[in-house]
Length: 410
Image (cartoon, rainbow, N blue to C red; front, side, top):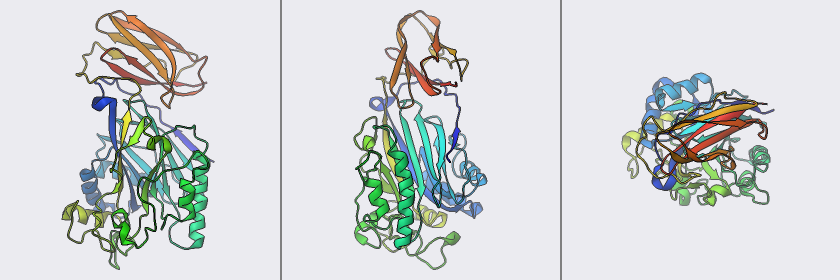
């Protein structure tokens, strides 16, 4: 059974244009927190140093065990005035959680996809400015080497592929997390990248026999510790495995709406100089001793990061902050059925266009197009031709743009 929580939210008016050629850059981090919140009183300050140095926009974590842990990470590691946390959905083992800058990103839903061992989390996100939708799958596959464990990882990936193979072609999706895969020939990895059906993933980084191979030293993410007694009961052995990854869909690889920034996908803090060593052993070329110590004390995994460019649907030139006299109001009622009203305000007679989009950013209907008189204009919207679900409407003029969400409940 899938558990689905729909996050009903109200987007604030966007009183500025989108800079950077009608796109917005988002930094995503995935991080195995090592049985968090165990030892959080001492570990939170270390996690905070790492997060402050990375400066993420979205953080997806694994091995979190409770709602208390979600709140502790949000309030003591991140900044609750900047980040929001998705709902914690408890399961049979440690779980995933998501944190995001809600000024940039909104969480539409969190679905748990059960497997024999751990749930896979599906986070559906919406970019507040570009109207792009991104699905992130967070995984923590079966640990340890050997045939039996490889087959269990394959079974978990088969469950994931059953989901992604049924997504519409062109969907932007990512899988991130702790895969516990030792080499690219493993059945689970081969299943992830198998393109015989549509829901496959692409690995932006080199594939190979990563385990205990210094040729791939710059890709390794575990272990940050090389002593017998590692902090918080973590695994030892030094950096010699690429367990943590971010893989992308074909649509992201093709740069159709959302695309991966070149050379941004990396194991944070790994300079390739720490093969079979602890992360905090000098010398360092990409981080300081303080950050290296924080990584050592926080978790036995390194975080993995990647940056993505989100392109907007409509062309929106950079503009100055708008005055109160240009407004797109939240529709009322919302949710609605059978009718709702959208109001917008312009300071002078202006040509405007009001368009309805679905969650994937596809244009469904032009609600208003033409000259709007100075003041408030009301547009009636019927749910007659719409299915239950979430939609977005966007008001555009020659130099202003604003978007909001409406929900149809039938």
